[in-house]
Image (cartoon, rainbow, N blue to C red; front, side, top):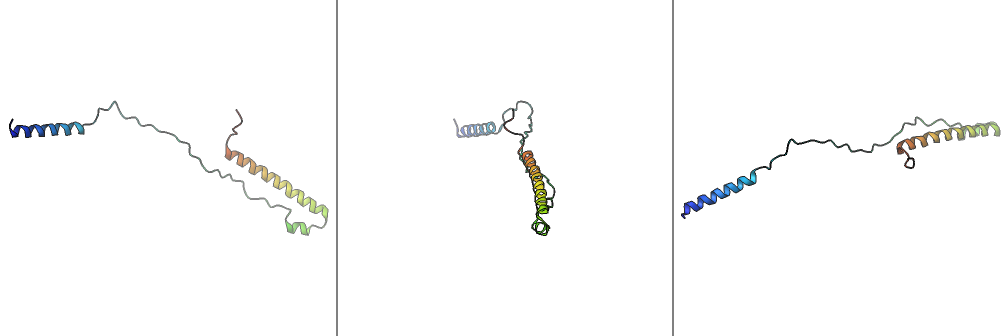
Length: 103
């Protein structure tokens, strides 16, 4: 074998090898695009409104003429605080989502 034949054989094998590496594998049909929905936690910021003006402030209790009026102011403030606490509890329960214990 001549040197030219060997050189041409090496060049041919190299070209065939590189051509085989460069070819892409056959595709089985069109590519399908899928959308995956992932739940993302969102911050819960309920709007409770403004804090009520409580009637049992230090100034109002000091200005009350007698014990009866002071007790009325304290009871009115307690009633407002209980109602506000119920609002906050309901808002936090809504942020927490459904209860885990219920089937």
